[in-house]
Length: 194
Length: 194
DNA sequence: GTCTATACCTGGATAGAC
DNA sequence: GTCTATCCAGGTATAGAC
Image 1 (tube, rainbow over the protein chains, first blue to last red):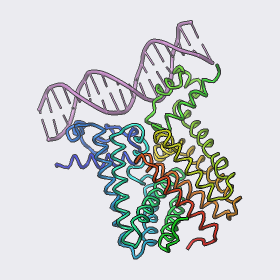
Image 2 (image 1 turned 90 degrees about the vertical axis):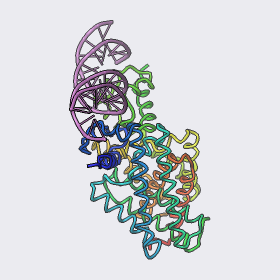
Image 3 (image 1 turned 180 degrees about the vertical axis):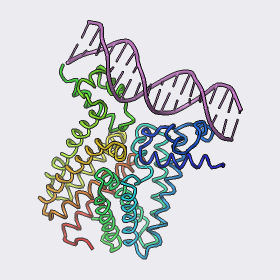
Image 4 (image 1 turned 45 degrees about the vertical axis):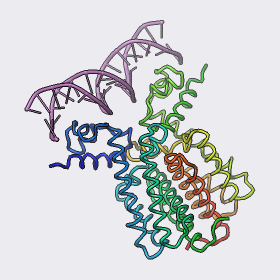
């Protein structure tokens, strides 16, 4: 087969997401991917850092598509947000509180320790913000409101993931979802900011 | 001196917060603490895990006091929330985007890998929720609203920390703070949930 | 190009001198 | 009780057989 690289990327994505960057070993990755050790350096000459960078970009961009898949097709903004947070809660419970954001753990780990990877996570988050802003403007929000709602939604989701994974309870995800909906409603009804 | 243990705890708290649990080595800790290597096992016979557990509990509980120090004394709930998010933004910038939540990075790292430490982070978050609920009820919210606002505020803060540290920009912290204020206002004016 | 063996280093942990 | 020397497993990375 020629999909060794794909298997390494898939195994890395799952291990990095669950165990973090420093918490995942290259030996662990090749074992999970059923690949020989040398393949890592064949496909990723830059070693662990290059592998992680590709994982951050690919799985991060993939995750960002959920704005288009879950929220954009919804009949209205509130319904779209409710569906997105509900879907996140289902996934979290089905995976025993393991599969939340694919890059959040790494983002915190590398924020102050690895500039290359920090930049990769930043570019992913910026892409999400652009995508979300586009989707929300199509629901009638101003450019400024749409951007602010996107940032508020991502923040609420990421923070709720931290609490829900730690507490092993989806309550934070539900509460954060309702708060995001309230923020959206406030913008839609034009109550604006203080 | 007899404060070797305190120096180890202080150095560990800072390193764990910035570099994470797996990203911090015990040798690194004793160097930063100017302590001999053996002292770690003298004061923490359980090794790295016991040290991390004590750090999570102590620095976590310390951080939870900010509810009482920053929000409780405020003239009103909205002002209190604004001050808390503003203070977090100032600290983040002053420390070059390093000092955010003392336990969030570890919480994500250990959520699926170390049940002892996961439980320690969960107990800290539960304590924060209780403290916040108490403070918010004193501002006139119902027990249920107060609990839900607390969870929404912590989620917004934690998520904004992820984005702000990655982007090296306090905009997410500002936006999340305004969203938290909007949620509080909605509860205070009795508009309730849908 | 695939894969194995290995080099080299740092990780956590321990023993024991003082 | 303070501190040093060391152990062994695991980490990343490389060399080279096939």
